[in-house]
Amino acid sequence: MYYIFGKYGVIHKIQTIINKDTKGTTFMVFLRYPRCEKPMDHLSRFNVENQYLIVLYLLSTSENE
Image (cartoon, rainbow, N blue to C red):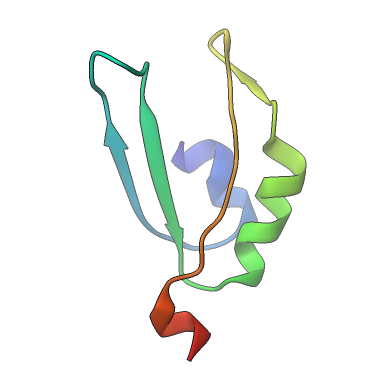
């Protein structure tokens, strides 16, 4: 994931959760908001090992203030 998303900006943290209901969910934290817009546009529906990425973003409340 660092290789795929790292070219769009500095990644602060990646957290992956795997459970029986999903094949995996990954949370990617960029240091700056504008950095998350490009991967969302470029990588939605991107195929990685026969799985398609769904890229969404969420602003934390501390970023909105």
